[in-house]
Length: 358
Image (cartoon, rainbow, N blue to C red):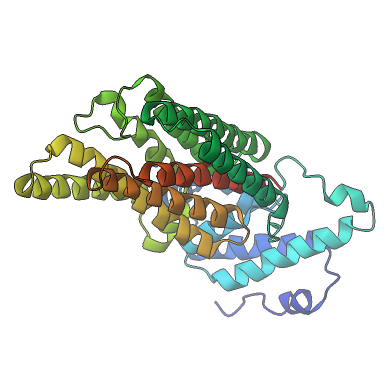
């Protein structure tokens, strides 16, 4: 075991002009060595424990092109390797490729090759945030000065606006998936589509409150968002807790917590258990999604997950504020504040999609 090829790797660590092929060879050799030390597990075995497809794992191990870092990290953790060393080799390969392609054509660096990973731009998405702020301010001004102050009319206008902006966010994430073939983008796109469908069904509902006291089956449409979002954001929590089905366990825990809260509230108040259960489930899934997003944003660079986590925080505030509608008399600003938080959620999710595509 003392024949590890640390000697040839040192010049690559010190030299800035490493050839792309030699840098990829070092990464490929590191992964091959780790796999041999673990008894040469099959691609399907590695795929099963890393939650990546066996084709993706095979491409990463072959290193014909520079693989995605999250795939490499998952493989190294599965093989009990040194993540920092693998990260260093991966960065050397990225730097070598950048140096090799930069003199050829500087304009081509901005063009993304399909299937080719790149270093994530960690700059603040000023353009997207500026546009989102303008839309937000315009919405506030319109709702403040021109709304007729009729609860049902205000609710209809709000539901239409949120359905439109939610649909835009869903399409943005699906466009990211079409461009990058990233399953997280697909999950968030489908989740935003489910959330938009839930908001749109409010247009045909007679309830002024978003969560009625006697919910029907269609009121559980909101579960489509956490079902997809928890799966899309679950890669980092899965690696951290060494549990493949951590997103499923989080959803089970959210349902159990909602059931417990509804039982306690029903025993101490006159509120119906089914309505309390839906509201508690709404909040518990929001908390789970926010926790997953924060864990992932802490581990990965870029503003994609930071913006998504901020949006999920706004969603949690909006859903939590709806409970105050039962405590305060009817003329109160809670519904208006909740609508603003929902709008911030949809806009921030669109900004996150824009950061993912840039």
